[in-house]
Length: 431
Image (cartoon, rainbow, N blue to C red; front, side, top):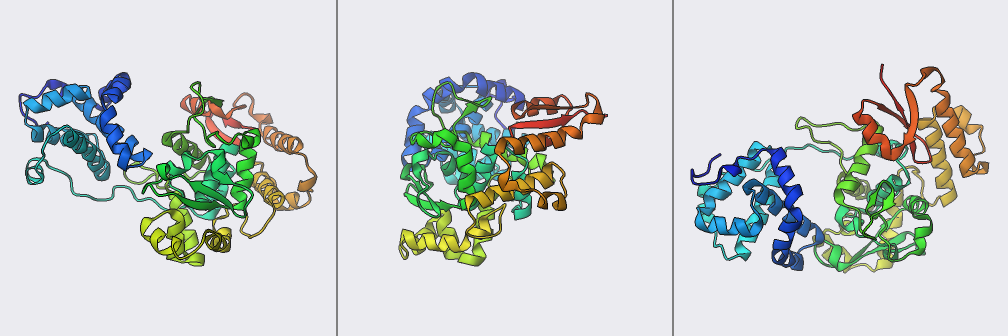
């Protein structure tokens, strides 16, 4: 550690120990950070508050001190040496340069609010920051890849993926949506983003595809009549959080998408061990797909980029922007590459994909079926029997489990085989 000899030995913590410290002291630390986080929240979004909380929790776990104790300690020591030691600690733990700088920014803001006057020139000389460089090479998923993802996730995952991919919303904005924020009576369905949840603190609207509406309704079911409900609430084993109606966390949403990617055979990693396709790539998918039919001005305005909001939103009415979106909606439709299809047609197309990609039917066999005449329960039974039939000669090496138990079984050595239509999956024990 590049810190003074008078610094406490507790700074030489390992990642595991830091994690345990954050877990054990988070509630008490957040109470002491209340004033700081309130100031951050006045100008920033909810995501800014979350990032600041995370940055300060990392710093406090490095020192193994609560915020108030950390302030008292830094007033007695060389603040630049402490910060330099924190940077070295993050580098040792292989923080990406951008993540490192974001955490350091949270600490500097915390110190400024508490009357520390940091000199930028001294910071440059005394604190060795890494040069910025991209450590992750991500990519935009293709429509074909996302089609496969949809066949390997449940109703919640389908709604999540199609809404993000067809709207261009930021994940943080998306997770704050309540039922009342979506107007399903319009075509396309219109989402009103409140000022308090957007990055620039300005209200705006965006749209989702007809396909996304279909999956959203299948996911919400009776909750569609509860306007105050979060569309994606926090849940534990499929049940609503014990404290009531709370929004799903970013990490939970990321896990849902990452699991679907893995199940679809798309869990590829780069040289740094980071996923090349992640949940933020759905926003990039929207931009790349809308760029050709709508042009950069409109595509970026729909995504909520401030520069293009100024140039496009002021020039066009909401109805005109809606017409623009309709022109490009086919490009951000995943299961169907055809504009104007009914919800029933979308449903039948999805059934075809399930039968061919998951249940192993040939296209010729599917063409012989009257999918529109099959009830939902009969369709689920047909897929289940097809998949279970493949298990006949495998003894006890394959079984059906609830999707919520998949992670635990994978940890025990089981392999994912296929998703059933009723929130169950088939797993296999390797030879």
